[in-house]
Image (tube, rainbow, N blue to C red; front, side, top):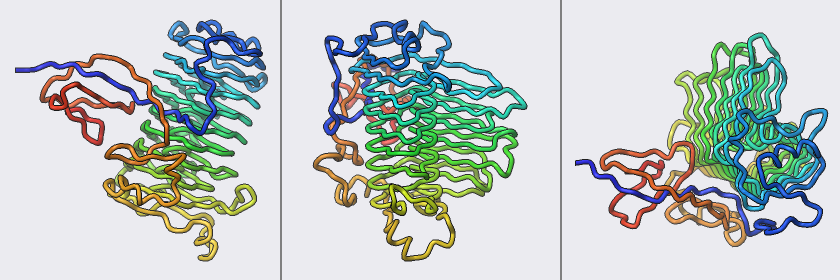
Length: 434
């Protein structure tokens, strides 16, 4: 007999507090800000791109069948938006084009501030029509940012980019130049389809390409990259957090738990559990799976696909310190490639030290993680891995019917399931409800 039970679905949405001075839950509009109460108010930000805005309600964007991103190359968003603890839901963008596009809630920002913003259930799809050399820059929050300051950012949903000559895609951001990001958490699934006209691909769980600083950021979303007749000279960087983070980029106190799936390869393809191309990287870990085709001829590493030692980050050689990854499969090392190949031993040891390869069980041991600040930044989850300290949750109270004997998958969202009777259902480490 089939027995049906109900449980409480709790979606864990991480956007650290503690070290960040949050300005959430303002009950009145602060002086100098403009209150956003409706979807129309949010849309109308484009009429004053230098304004300072704050959400005063949850915003449902389903009233816009095809959202037009705020800010263009010629007229970028230069103001501020504070989410104030509220949600933006059901953002939808669907584009078929032969032209360059910058896609997200925002298209292009310059010297802007985006804080405490949570976007749930986004759906962004962009397809390049044949015989085009167009560029796509896509993220749920924004496509392209120049000198952005952002903190406490969270996204969920899906991004699918197909057929562009150059692709920058991330769960939250497409491209970040000279930007500083703290506490960015992605739960969106990112899918990229490369085709015969594709020449460059940069894909990350959080950011496609970044120059600047990414700190205290996490990815739970899966990355899927497929290709049809992709030219052999194409350049591809894929990472659990960032695709290309090699030029003046600092990547600190972050982790990835999303999986990376690829069904093709080219000679210049670099896939890393955290970065496709990495510069300075410290106090990070990867617990995500990397699944490659049987005849993969690119580079792959548990942390980085390639390490760029040609550049100086903040005046120094890039450093890779205190990095940890699970390697229970075939991934040969923490980096698939060291560039340039003639880096001498002394420079290597001074810059990169010794990465730690661990089993999933060893990763649950706090003592493994040297130099992680467990007083102010990190903590150990119960029977689990390190997480960023003081991560609040969004609880979505929803009854879910479970049929005994069937298995339930969490999908691309990171979820916890709870019931008043622990004998009713169990959940394994893959998020499967049994």
